[in-house]
Image (cartoon, rainbow, N blue to C red; front, side):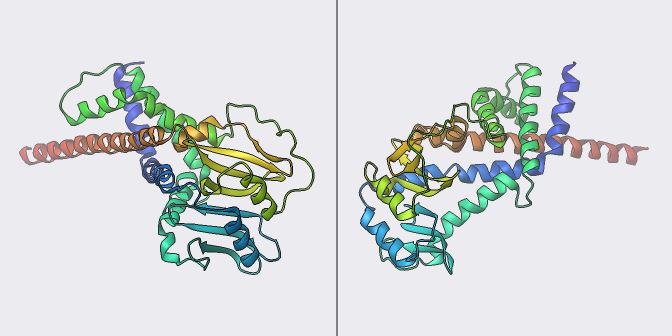
Length: 307
């Protein structure tokens, strides 16, 4: 296949998927800040089991809640499935319902995640197709061969793609693995997780025996049992909760790498660099095409005036 044909395919695949790719990349850029924000806000020992149990007793006296979410950057605890209100977000400092204005950052991350995964249109298939298209663009770029690097827009576009190639490949590849539910790790049912699911308050006590609740991300149903996600040693770890204790679950490496939740701040920053690079490639590639079209249009207009 000739280089000119590869270049044409590269160009038209990029143009066909430009808008969904822009949405996915921009929201990915926003989400790449989330691990940095969350890890920076954690204060070890700041959340006790007594505090969480007291809030559950106050806002969920009937014990109907099945999930809770801790946001250290906002110092709030959200309790889901509370009757009759449904969901309540509590300020950990005062114990009172949180001011909605303090949740703007979590709302931003939540909206970004929704767009990143579904484009707000229940179009997860389009996100998956765009991810495949991104990998196809990378493959076409590789087959075109090592470029001549020059201090031009095209030179910067090619140089950015080649010098950051491992990062540029890893992000859509792990995203595609997530879309197809591939974890690259065996995930057998943890030993000792049996019997009826734990009530939420008991799950909190079980988790607090060996873990600092200030590092909690969430406790929610996963399968038929409750599971917890904790930020520990620069990694988001998941535990299955039973009356026997908190049992570590198998790591989903695609998720940890794609979300920047492994390796501390280093991977989170690399994810940020990757998002900026992907956005730069999309913008510079689109501008190169648009500039070419404008030049052709200008040439045609000059030719029409001459003739």
